[in-house]
Structure formats: structure tokens, C-alpha cells
Length: 401
Image 1 (tube, rainbow, N blue to C red):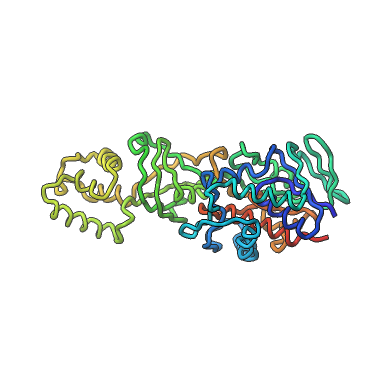
Image 2: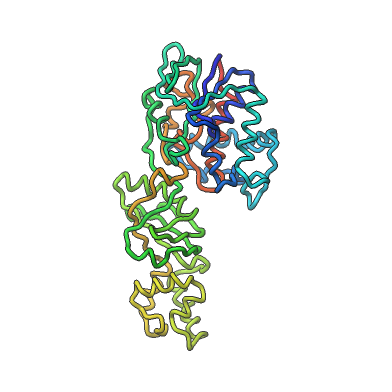
């Protein structure tokens, strides 16, 4: 039996290694001139390759129950796999990095294993078409190959400069598979207003609430990066896929920012807190009181938007208006960043059309899928690489004659 793995990214490499360790004749074909191109960029070059908190609420799919089965089947095998590659981890608050703090360590370890196992890797060839007759006929930019089984590990459309240009979706569609709508995810969100220059460069903790068609659907807490275009940062990224999908479906998407996440209580409680602050700081202006807990740029912007003067006293202002901006600041969404800037995609090959135990196609015998081409992605924090490792292990362990 001869198996072709299309794509030398995270999931494809793990899959090929496991197949070869089982004695299966496997070849990897890669359109780039080297392997792991996208992997080298992860974690800002540090490669956050795993997270010790593994639960289904960290992952998203149109078919969440199937995704849950996939995660639970292999999550215990990921760390032993990397231990056997010689990777020493550095664990920071549950986030796993190679101790070297370099993504090249992970890529080199995988590459070394390919060499030790004598796995054939074909570089600089792009798979253009796959047809299934008795066997798979694989046409590339240079050759035509015949294989017994094929694993599509081609990634999605995010960060296309690394080679993920969406061709895998086309190949899957040509083979009869359904592609759930693909949109950018883990990316910044651009707003409609003209005051973003005023908050550019600010980093501040906040609670972000995503409201879709007047209904709260998700909430994230963390550091927001305020930019000339809108908002960014991990908590923003974790909402972006839902925003992109909602906008593509014609839904109304809004984000509300609580800029005082440290305060536990209602608006009424917060008003009372500010009443007490004003009495304690009896000679302070509203601007000076706000600067006691909020970035100066944000203070100035809120005062500008509410038309309240910096040197006014608490007793002189519209208290409910200023509290609304502090606790429920409305961010008017224009769009998310595009695939060029996105870390991953939301959407992909429908999990309904694959066997959750093997990731083999239910439509085309001998065709398998791993990694980002599937309709599955995780939040920030090592979860998307985690999904790549787990799906690679599933196919590597379960592909059979």
C-alpha cells in the first residue's frame, strides 16, 4: 500500500511519521521548498504547540459533537509524541513552548524524524487535481502519480503566503465533499468610526461581549489592543470568526466593551463607587478621577465622545452617560481582517462527511483529512496546533488497508 500525504504542515508531518512507524509506505508532497513554513510563524516564532487545558469549549465547528469525539480520542497522546521527538517543554500557565523558545526546534525535530524514518518528501510541486478510479490519480504541477490512499493536509486559506491558498477545499469539493462556509478567524476587527487614532497604541484589560441580531452569543475577557483600524488582541481574535461568519450571513454584529472589568457589580453599583470616589477625592476633576483606573488616552476619548470637559466635577456631569461608556462602550463593526492577516479559518470540510474515528471520507474510500482543511478550529493558546497534532495522530494510527 502506498499513501500520499498532501502538505508538509503540522498535521501532515505527524500523520506521515505515524504511518511510517507502522511500516506503511508514505510520501509527502509539498508545494513549498521546505516543510513547516506556517509552523515556523506560530506563537510569534516561539511556537505555542499545546495547552494543558483540553476541553471541547476551546474548539469550534458546525458539528461540535463530532469534534468533541475527535479531541477526546487523541489528546492524551500528543505530549508523549513530542517527548519521543526529544522536545523539552517550557510550560507557562499551561501553555507549552519548546524550551528553546524557537519554533525552529519543533520543525527541526519533525524533520529529523522524517530523515531517520527515510520518509520521501517531494518539494516544489503543487497538487492540482485528484481523481479516484481504482486508485487515486494525483496530478501535480510537474508529474502524475498513482497512490492507494491520499491524506489531504493542505491547510485552509489563512496566511496564504505560507502556501494555504484554499486549493484543498477545491480538491475536496471535486471529490464530492461539502465545504462549510470559510471565513477568516483569529484576526483583528475593523470598526466604522473615525476616532480610532485617539486610542491607537493603547493596551487595556476589558470584557468584550459579542451581540448578534440583538442577542448575546459570546463573551471574552483579556487585553484589548486598540489600533488605528479598531481592536485586536487575543480576546478580539477569539470573537473574530463568529463576527466574520455572521457578517457573511447578513447578520447584525456588535461588540460592547466593559473597560472596567475589575469592578464586579451592576451599573448602579458602579455609579455608587464613583460617588464614593468623588467624595474621597473632593477636589478632583472627572478627568483626574477616571485616570485613577483608566488609560489617559481612553479617558480623553470618552470625555470627547460624551462632550464632558476634563476639568468638570463629578457633580456637574451626566453620570449615567459616562458610566455607559465605561461599562458598555459600543464598538461599531465594519469587518474583520482578511485571510492574509488571519491565523486560521472558520469553516472547511464538513465533519458530517468523515468517520470521526479515522477521519476517512464517508464518500470516497481511501481519502482522509487532517488539520485546518476540516471545519474545526480552536481559540488562541496552542489549540489550533493541538488540533493539527490530534488529527494527524488519528489518521496516522487508523489508516488501514
